[in-house]
Image 1 (spheres, rainbow, N blue to C red):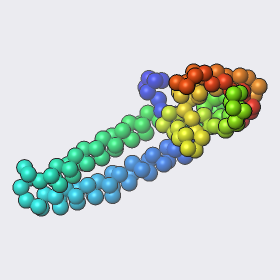
Image 2 (image 1 turned 180 degrees about the vertical axis):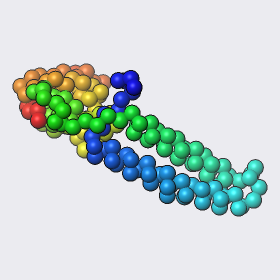
Image 3 (image 1 turned 90 degrees about the vertical axis):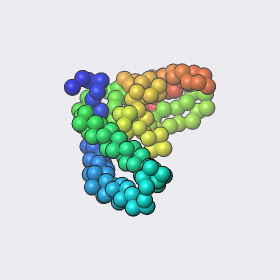
Length: 158
C-alpha cells in the first residue's frame, strides 16, 4: 500500500465508519430497494420519473458505500501514544493566538477524513495544520490565506 493512499484514523473514527457502512449495507439498501419497487409498481418505466429518481438515488448510495469501503480498507489506526515528539503532530491539541487579533484558538490536528472545523479538528494537510506540524510552545507560525498572511503564536502543544 502506498503511503499516499493511507488514511489515518483514530480507533473511534474507524468504529464510526464501520458502523455507518454496516447500516448502509443492511437497512439502507433495503430502503432503496423498497423505493425502486414502489416506483416500478406505478407502471411504464420509460415515463416514470419516480423510478428514474429512485435508480439515481441507488447509484449515489452505492457510490457512498464504495467510498466508505475504500477509506476503511486504506485505514491505518493512530494513537497519541505513538508520538514521542515535543512538537505538534497528528492528534496533538494545539492552542494558538492570532497575533493580529489576539484571539486564542484550540485545535486538534487530525487526518483529512476526521477534520471538522465545528469541532475544532483541523486536518494536518490544511494550510494551518501543515504550518503547525513540528512547532512547539513559543514558536511562531505564518499561514498564507486568501485574506492575507495570518500570524500565530503557539501557546501550548499537548
